[in-house]
Amino acid sequence: MKTLLLAVIALALAVTPFSTRVTAAAAPKRVVAVSFAPVLNTPDFAGSFGGKVALDPCRGVRPIEFIALPGTLFAVEGELEKNGVKVLRVTSNDYPYPSKTGLYVDARFVEEADAAAKDRPRHLPELAEIQKRLLAALGKPYVWGGNVKDGVPLLRKYYPHGDPLAGVDCSGLLYQATDGFTPRNTSTLIGYGEAVPVAGLSAEAIARKLKPLDLLVWNGHVMVVLDDESIIESRMGCGGKRSGVMMTPRLELIRQIMKTRKPADSFPKGSAGGGAFVVRRWFPPGGAGAP
Image (cartoon, rainbow, N blue to C red):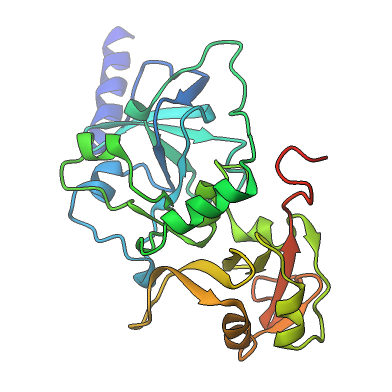
């Protein structure tokens, strides 16, 4: 019997790929981010950040889901090793979006959470501070899954090929400016806050209705009204188009959008949304802390 058991164990080890092997040690039930922590939809951190793969959203190379902020709490579903890197499969209330392949974090970016640990507290900055942070990202590159404009220091420590996450995507621009108070994906932002009625209006009429921090959004892209004059966004810029964080006069941008999309009061069901966009007002009228 003992000889048979040893043979079964040896066979199991032989068929388990060396590059991805589940460890015998039990993973902690919950961990907390000790720094900015990239969350991927693949356990292959070494492959994603080792310099062999160019992270190119225009070509569909998109392993990054988001960058968890320090203090983000994760529930651990499993532990494995991939190309020499210990990786945890996780879920988090900070990122409640489905992933067919799961969500993963490099174990060096987190530590075991104590029994009393709670989800990262959310505190909305004041209007002027959010505007200041949005402006500070001006000129930064578009990075799929990015929401830390200056990148991830620990990434540079553990993956010496560089930091490809110094930049922001469209919803990441807002997420960073609000300290992670706002939803991370446009699929939620299309219904976030209250609708500003814009269906059937002209570009000029819509521009007059906008207030600072209103969102012009569809499922796939979001733009933020910066002030009385401008709208700020992070554009992917495929096909030789302008890319990165940029500002545009509000009326000019609305006219651009309305060449291909129609204003709606609520976003139609379906990922395409019938070529619509909506305006959402989420910032409290009295400012941060207002009921």
